Amino acid sequence: MRYWLFKTEPDVFGVDDLAEAPEQTARWDEIRNYQARNFLRDEVRIGDQVFIYHSSCKQLGIAGIAEVVREAYPDPSQFEPGHALFDVKAAPDAPRWFCVDIRLRERFSQVILLSRLKAQPDLENMTLLRQGRLSVQPVSAAQWQIIVSIR
DNA sequence: GCCAACGTTGGC
DNA sequence: GCCAACGTTGGC
Image (cartoon, rainbow, N blue to C red; front, side, top):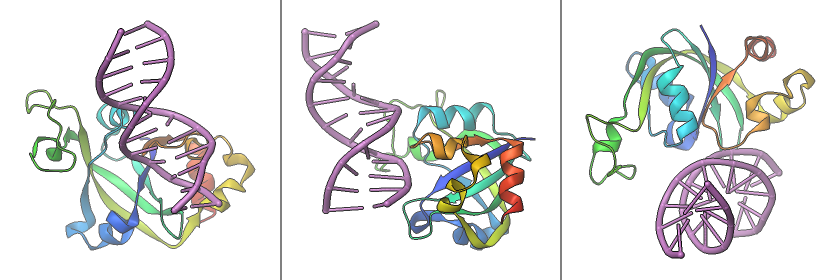
């Protein structure tokens, strides 16, 4: 079992939306970055635990925990003409983009703020703090434990 | 709204 | 394959 961090803009789809979804389960789709795609397609597995990170909003930080309940399958949006993320180079027998399904496990009573993560010396090597623009990223077991312990 | 960092595109 | 131009991410 591995740990991940998924970024999302809560104005579009955040932890609250996941909480209100049927069975608190939703498709995690519209990923259009190859590095993120490769993680989703090749490494994310059922049972893996995921931090839901809220970006581009008032309360930047980790808002909850979800669990992967369905492994990679082709992201339907790439095949829909007219969809903003329609991909003319993708075909049903040769999909380029993948998605997974996740189920909410815990919504934090308070978002663990980015500023707090930055202030934590033993998190300085977190991918979140080292590399921008990566919407699916691994979290080490040690990092996961530290973050869970300060929630 | 700004802009740094980084990814993608496309001409050569 | 290089690299300039351009687009996107995402914190501030």
